[in-house]
Image (tube, rainbow, N blue to C red):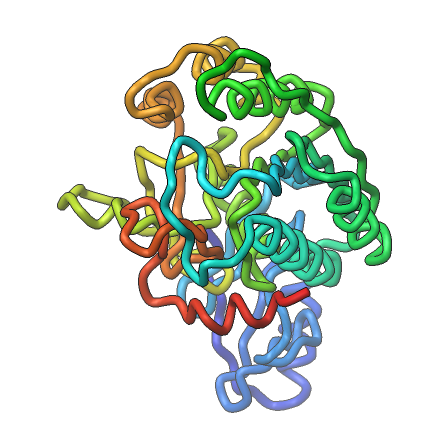
Length: 329
């Protein structure tokens, strides 16, 4: 990690220092203005260089050795079922389709923000759907297309003779893992009841590049800070991202980001999770986290819109109403 040096020199000496630092890859900070003369950036600008260097004021820089080239967003949708195997109502008590539409709205808004910062990263949506009306699917695909992003639709048929919705849900999860093997780089698996902050995806990619470069390995990264993670006093390592903190965790639900390499590495275990019921359902995923690094944001970058009393739902210290209202259809 290279030191960010603070300077306030005469104009001539400053120009010489800037030229030298550009040659050797250092950054400087003008302490009087907090500007960055080497990269010609101001304090309010994005300091880090995606795919090249992560810079945190007061800490220093990390050279990026793991550049992100593409992001596939795989959204598993079902606008006809409120909560799988439950009769509880979700927060705000709307029709299930409203959560799906707002999830899509939040993701397209976040991708637009991402493309301003990671201009070379290719983004593609895949909608893996179970039993949603054609009008809903068309609305989802039109929204994504109208924002200028590529999208495809993969239908999953209802499994007949199943006693609940879980069998069909598991088929959807399996399909998402098989599809991930066709992707090229990062994959973000998303349930259709996660509403994201605008900066979510960019923050996740900044963290992915930085942390995978530090650990020299692929990682898992979450968008949600789940409340159940605070039920036990577990030790955590805290890391600095671009504009948020991250901590390592050993549990999550099925909304997470990782790489194609990691999917291939743990493919059999993931398919087994989506085929044979466990308690908890994500047991295999948690076992993977015992071997691989997984990071969760503090505070949360998305909210899981489940029942308000669910420990798997509402992230703490987030303006829930604002996030909900900001992503209205």
